[in-house]
Image 1 (cartoon, helix red, strand yellow):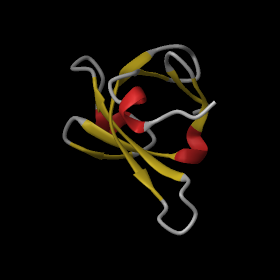
Image 2: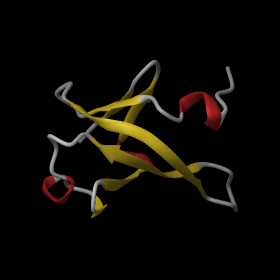
Image 3: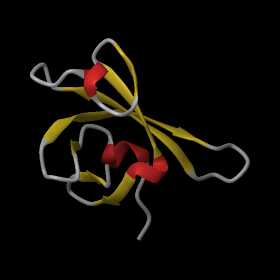
Length: 79
């Protein structure tokens, strides 16, 4: 089953323990392979982006694709 970017934008992003971190706001692709390279997530106000193990800028974090365990109705991280 193919998933299109517009279908996953806005989905909740959960850490490996099931804590809601925020919502997916953008997807970056590797232009050579066509694979997802990074997810851009806007974190919830109660979450400190700087405290997460990802590159952060104000209220957003850049999550590398290898930190994603699965994408379903929610996006689950393995970190």
